[in-house]
Length: 99
Image (cartoon, rainbow, N blue to C red; front, side, top):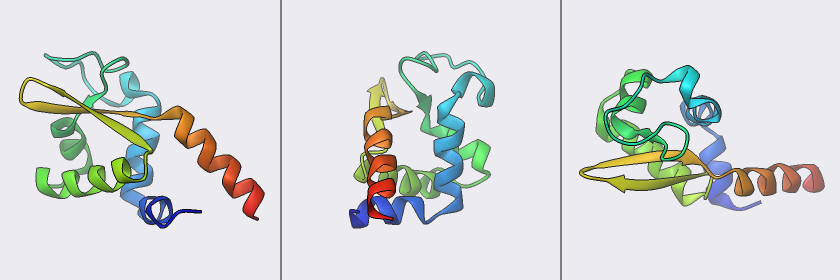
């Protein structure tokens, strides 16, 4: 298992982000720009839901992106995040193999 993945999964906040992004329509309000399902969730909304500053949320999101668990997409001046389901499936399989 890669260090980046283990680091990403070692935080309750990052696990919470992954859970919310599994069903963004349930966990986030509609956005002005970008579709919640196809484009992802604006980092600002993720920061608000976590009750942290945008720089703190950005650090969590950066770790998840580095692990390949989420992907960012720039729309205008904002970055929208969605789960990388292929990578998440790969990580789950690796955990099953390694243990």
